[in-house]
Amino acid sequence: MIIVLMGAPGAGKGTQADLLIESGKYRKISTGDVLRKHIKMGTQIGKNAESIIAQGKLVPDDVLLEILRQELGSNEKEVIILDGYPRNVAQAKTLQSLSQVHRVKGAVVLDVEREELIARISGRRVCQACGATFHVSANPPKTQGKCDKCGGMLIQRPDDVPEKVRVRLDVFDKETKPVIDFYNQMKSLTSVSADGSKEEIYKALKKAVESLSSGKN
Image 1 (tube, rainbow, N blue to C red):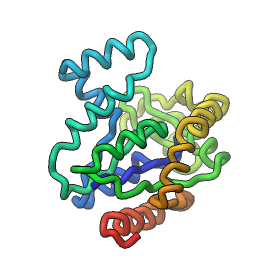
Image 2: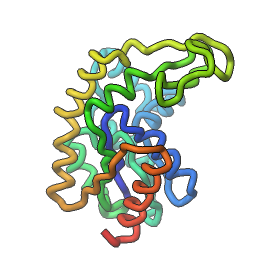
Image 3: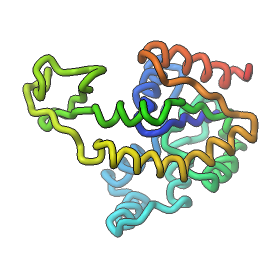
């Protein structure tokens, strides 16, 4: 069984997915992580994907689907949280073709206002040395500009400035919102507010996922 987890950049999708996995009831598959694993292992799929990426192109849908098919395996009783796929309606329709073994039970979208997303991402600061992440207001370091963990310098990533964040959100709106509409039309979409504390969001998300996986939606 597959549950698609969706959300715009800054919605906290990665954090919440990891919390779900910690419960021990689900397995998470991130197509980005799997793609990087294949490239690192030097598999044929990985080599093909690396060559495509090196040319500045997007990895084709058929390559992503094959990677996903291998990663899903044949255990139809597993509940899999799918992160990073589908990114467009064509991929969403293709994903339905796996229903003989892995039925797509539904999609859950973490919903956040656009200005809040911009504030979250543009306020993010990352340690140059260890990669630890802070936020200027939500999770500030004890000493401004320095990492609490290693004392390294905190920086703002170039793509985290508000102008770049707006571009990323525009891309999300153009490419991914039609996927949300796709699942909504199929009456298999659940929206969860991602405003609030990490614990509050997780509680609501966990309830939505459990409802889908138990067939009570």
